[in-house]
Length: 521
Image 1 (spheres, helix red, strand yellow):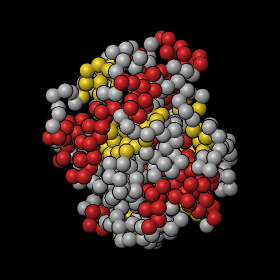
Image 2: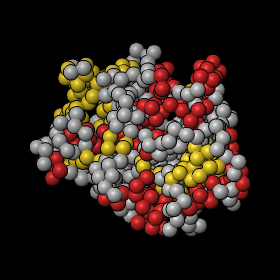
Image 3: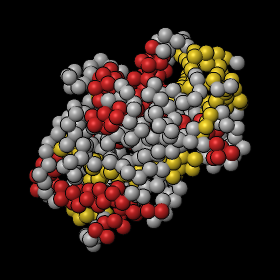
Image 4: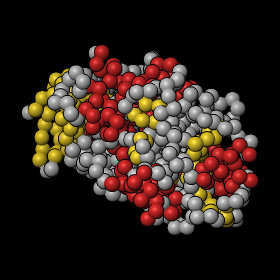
């Protein structure tokens, strides 16, 4: 049995950060169920949706959603080095300061905004330069889009014409308003966690990264986690951790592996004949995600990303890393407080200078644009549960989308605001007919039916190994699994409450903070 100081399970956003930081001083084994991040589409920003349902995507589906006309919703998750940071839309958002202060009020000391801000800054190489809220010189490159679309500029102006403020920096503590999003790119190409953190660290002899290596079971001596069993290329192997095993599989895979290893609700584990190592009923519970619905319009000029794969644009990207292929698709957006008394905006928008309907699978080939209202104050909660004791069987994903009526109300209001912005003067030279929902959909009841039929995940599942001190918490504020030793969870699953924006930067922050805690222990 091979032996290391630390074993990290999952080479996604969090795992790459941990592998880099911990291997500076310790021996580390990093296990990734997928392969290397070599597909060409990974580095081409505008091509990310071409990775969906490919060999680098877990391609999960939810259970039928009762409040969404019993649809099974598609959940892409990265299955390669970099995880979902190698498949996402590269939007750099931190969430509102009150999100983190809320975590602290739940008993998670030292997770308030002022506690986490230094780790956002530590991670960051902000191309605009350092400031009180931004860092320079960190591993993760954060930049403005090199070649924003003419439609994107028109959208931002239209939002101001509709009465919303302009916002040039959504990450300085003030989210409200509209503007262009910053992205995790470098010189026009994707800057994933694998590129930023893992690849520089692979030069160290202290770090071993194994791909096509899926963890199947955590190993215990009593209630101490001592290592992991994994399958690589058909062969079962084991590895020993002298110090700790760290789960960084994300909101689906981390709770699944805990349950397969005997940590979870005893009644649920008993259904599959799994011996209980530690009774933790919260494992897999508290699932939260952001939903986006997709009002779209035809565009009368040939300026959208529908032309991104023309020979001219391909040449422009290959030779100069410019042009439509540098687009992250979700180029701009904004945040709105619907309730003035709310601590943070409940509604976010993602603007795409292209049709983006049902993850791009159902989009017309013509020129178009999308203004996607996104629910970011989420009340509906769900769960990840086992379907089988087979570690290669997918678990049951039950988000219970729209089970809270307030979530539907926010999305309905979002559709109305999207239409208001679309009908402003700045977009008039480009705007054709509304494609979805279409002009016949006008009443609240009709908009609700559109939401049920066209809303999709925005790929931000969190919360299923939540941090806290209550009976449903899975990890403590140091991210150690309650009741056992030698085991932590470090990924988006530890969020007790979902942040109100895109979750990649917060996940990287969590791993940066965890690395410091681990190294100090």
